[in-house]
Image 1 (cartoon, rainbow, N blue to C red):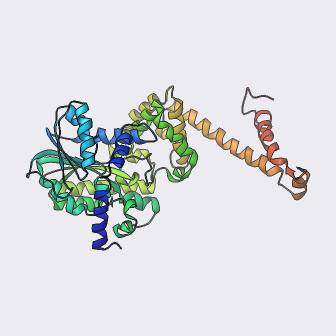
Image 2: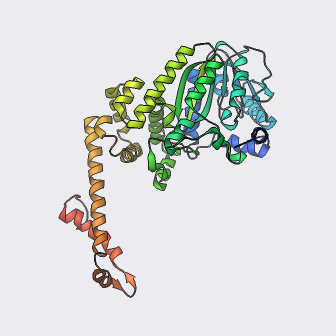
Image 3: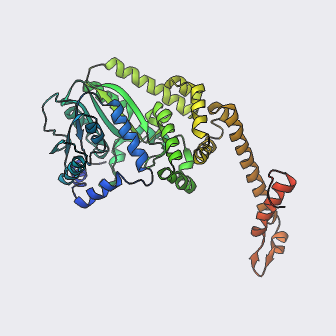
Amino acid sequence: MMTTDNTRSLIDWKTRAWQDPAMVAWYSGRMTENTGTDQLKNRLEIDLCTQYACGDRILDVGIGTGRASLPLAASGKTVAGIDSSQAMLDECARLASAQGLQLDLRRADVERLPFADADFDTLLSLNVLVHFPHWLQILPEWARVIRPGGRLIFDVHSLDNMRAALGREVSEDELKDVASGNYMLRVATEDLLAACTEQGLALVALVPYGAFLGGGNRNYLLGELEDRFYWRRFFSWVAKDKALFDFALFLEQRLVSRLSPMVSGRFMVVLEKRVDSAHNAACLESIRRMDEQLRQNPLNLQAIATLAGVSLPELRHELAAQLDGALRPRRLLELLMTAATGRLSPRELLTTDWARRFENIAARRTQDRRVADLAASIYTATPAVSAALVSEGVALGEGMEYFLVEKILTRALRSFTGVRS
């Protein structure tokens, strides 16, 4: 278990980590380059900040390069930002100047904000609180500078997700027992809402996101699919294929965001500065019901739709529009449906026409697998057969099975046409 001294050391290490100008330059470039899932993550987070920010005065805590608040400043909001790194503030000022924007930038600590009480309408903070274990001490200071009725917007990692993915309890002390550079804060929904009630904050939204992003988190819905190299290789196309990017964004915003923090490793927290313990208790009960439904059947869409207020017929038609004429989105959905075999029927999710297509794909895949297993087993059936299919020490059976699979599929089963005979 991490001691008080170790906790302080972790806080200090995390505070200093981004003060190196070279690291800041790398981070600034990473916010604009389109590799891996960076742009998908940025889009999800910026859209959520834009959606939930209220009022005209915005404070960005741990502003970094300003990726969350520069769009708000460009829309006419008055933006202030703090960061412990002067190098980060300098880079943010440079980027703001290039867009003709002026921000009030100050070097300060996340738990000691240099502003008066109730000075802002919204405080937002991206990828900051996840680095610090003392969030219960930080939260009151953030609430202090927000006016009554104002909002706090920040992201954290989900302890509920980690517990569901591992299938066991995980304590906060266990999470702290890592090297400083590997520490990430994970918060349980129940603990978060208890802290909100204590601090006079009411829940507006808990929005899970990043189900496809990885980053040390597991997607409770994907299961073992995330362990497959072909999945990571395929999903890397999100950086280059606009149709795949748009489809992943659609799945995140239309489906993942409607579920509970148990389904994804990261979630956005939106709080309002007002006392409403009954509302927080009702929200917690609703999340618990959804968690229980997800545990019983993670992909029971009808039950999830009822809890989340989604129209399944409308969703089916939206999915059909996303899939029409787009190759990689179809492949993405096929992989997701394969991962959900036995838990999700194509007819639950898709229109009749698309359901038939995916059922046909699944049937052919199953047939291919069985034929391949048969072909591979023939030359190893008995020692005599195995010995007969060896020439000068080279096993010939493994090469023959490919041709055998083709013959079985095309001639015996007539599964395919247009293949050489």
